[in-house]
Length: 240
Image (cartoon, rainbow, N blue to C red; front, side):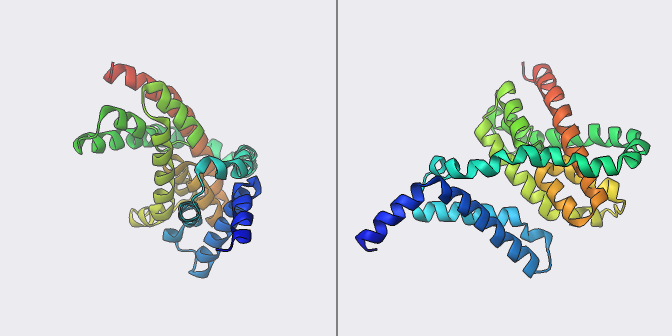
């Protein structure tokens, strides 16, 4: 690498614009692969983007904080994007009202099963108490999950990793699982993805069907609320 090019590279890699450009380019590449190979769930564009960004940061020697200085604009847009989920939900309000009892049962069952199964598997594999507590809120969107993790004694940074992995895996393979157990109702499919895979699952549901996307957004929001209330209570009952 020539000295002039090296100086230019050092300047560009430290620029906030570099992080934003890298994020958008990586996601666009992920979408291209996703579309090119027939929108296969296993080729989730978020997963591809994460891998591309991580590889680029490692090869270029850019620390995460420098990258996030530019990428935080995309992070800021998560708030408006989440609020915008109210639009498809409003359009499906009558269906939501008719399904209220079933949704409540599914929410409580799904939220409890998600947390308890993760903790039980981690315990069986010999994980530490702090790891189990970090894993418990894995199916909730990151800001809520990290707050709950800190409140009950987990590691918020570790929880964030579990949240991302859960979302990617559930969004990639959730459709196959729902087909396998013969769940065909778009309301149930969407709500299940929202509860199990938070924002990434909701984005996947919106790609497939508007009704599924609306119920996924509802599931994501309600699961975050229920988890934020119930997990600290369960922690006090079983770990203190």
